[in-house]
Picture 1 (cartoon, rainbow, N blue to C red):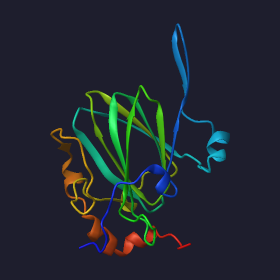
Picture 2: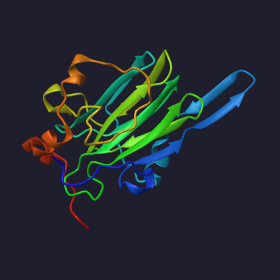
Picture 3: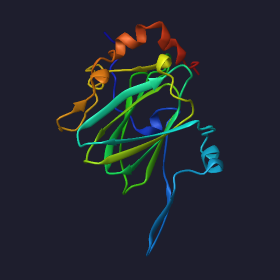
Length: 195
């Protein structure tokens, strides 16, 4: 049982998370969109070296997550390329003042929102439309032996998912509860130094 109440936070309240709008240049032919420019990321405090890009396509109601990778630690730059999602980040860093708290963003092909999650955050989303495509730029290559997950519907987290029937993989339905993960010695990979 957790000794605190997990809560929804604004992105400004959770140290490390960043959100920005990708630059879009429309004209009569369509548009050109810059997902990111490295120098502009650095000005935002995101000094990331991306090593892998992953793209998923999901039906309406698909939930992916809550995923993280501790070995090697993996940060993610997330963008919804087509359709829309409710995107969730959960702070899993020991000694963080927002440990267990979460941030929710609605991301779509229409709002061009880009979400940065450094290592130490579990990530997941629910597709709000059919044929939703999400692109992840990752700072480390996928390492199955160093990945983990927390149940998307863990009541300790109190995430308000949309009232859409959820389609969840068997693997994600077997993820640990948040309290179980915190008691696992591997969780110490995500620890912040108190200010």
